Image 1 (cartoon, rainbow, N blue to C red):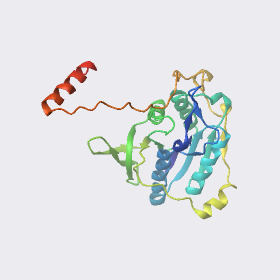
Image 2: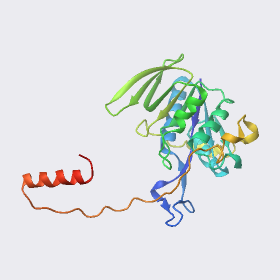
Image 3: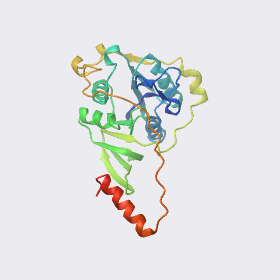
Image 4: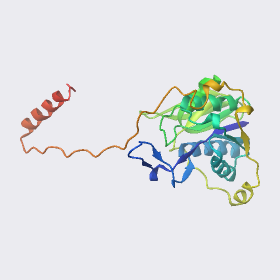
Length: 260
């Protein structure tokens, strides 16, 4: 079985700040990490590898420093690592990113693709489903657990607001994994020692067949007009009244806000 895991390097949002003038993220001095949901997707792939045997490829798109998360994936147990890196890919929104990743995936053998539900720097949850649409694959989102029959069918536990759904999906397919799935394993000490000797394939614009008008900033239909931090709420009004009077005050406030 061939498994591909799409991962992303993201800023550690526990330390992220916004430029108050430009309204953009201040990335200088902020450590980068593997996106947590993606790491859970990698863990699902490695569990399948442990149980059934599989070849696991990790794929990411980003600048040269994104190599760090690919080496982390090697140390966890991945077999192949590919970095999509080219200035022409820069400035991509989710649509252009998924288009580029899908083009790369057409050159990689796979039976199943894993990705995280969403990235913590954007929180859109769009790239995984968009990849599936580009490739014409069945997809299941919000996946918490995956089992395999050893042949060609996956049994998937999907988290929903009401509980769980159990679905059967034939390969090839794509799953997006949530952070409450199986906790990612620690890097293997033996693999850490060898990871910097292993090859990371770097693919640029010339390595994949894409339309230059649909990648990077040029191919991105969305634009961020402004980013800002959430302001503190003003202190509410305190009323010492009877329950009946309190209900009337609430009713009037709702009318003021055009809620009722």
